[in-house]
Length: 408
Image (tube, rainbow, N blue to C red; front, side, top):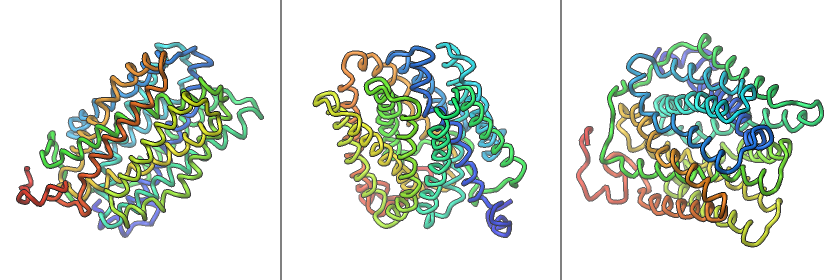
């Protein structure tokens, strides 16, 4: 069914509604897994910084191999693959607590990560194909808010009931992962197969004129690891936060994101990708330096918690990179480039967690200093984005060259 034909369907069966429903399903499993992970591996499996580094290296391997999605799409439609990967993510998350050994946790982490990364690859592609350029900032902001709302519901349940009724890791993982599977199956049977307005190229696509997008993706993947791997681990290891306390911190963050998501989208539409990314990277640089200050100056839990929330809020602005690519891309390049970009995003993610895990064991403050350096490099790259990016003007130097051919 084409997008024009889909406009005549009931609102709940339209492509945008499917994107919103999948935005709910993914964080129910993934955000819950992430919220409990640090407490689970420390309390149950006895992990140190070395093991947590290796866990996140394993978790990022499927992201590095996201380019394989291009081959899969020769046989399977993007929409079907997205649903199948949601099922894999939910099922693997559901049984996480059944295998509390290093080998078991790494195996299930790999499976759930395949589901998460391959879903995100095709989901981002579908978003950019199905949403009009003029509405993209607002709709993407709404998707952020909806995903945050789903995470909020999961975290709120954990905070309210973990101690009160004696929830266990097994129960929470089973319920959250199971809900993701059920929603994915509903998406499979309730929605028709939608066709984007432009047929997608099936082969590997690497364009010289997308170089800045690739570079920003690489830096985004590198700096993200500092937060994903070590910020939450620090809150548990250094400050001894319990499951309910760590989840409450995440809950505060997602309340703010749910409220601010649409506002972020409007700000992106008003100020443009360049200004939004500059704001994001300046903020992240300061936050990472302040993380180091927790060790240098002995700052306490309240400051650490505030920094953690700020960190998450700045990362929520990352959808500016999506709309930047949407503006400069050949419409037929969106699906294959989404896969390539996801792979580039995870190059550093495969080796950084393990290497920084060893550095963490001796100098955790240096890990955050490295994060600040990465954010500064991303800031310099963001300054190369023109005010109004489009094909032929992908960077501030774009006007020097002639308008590129579609194959450039």
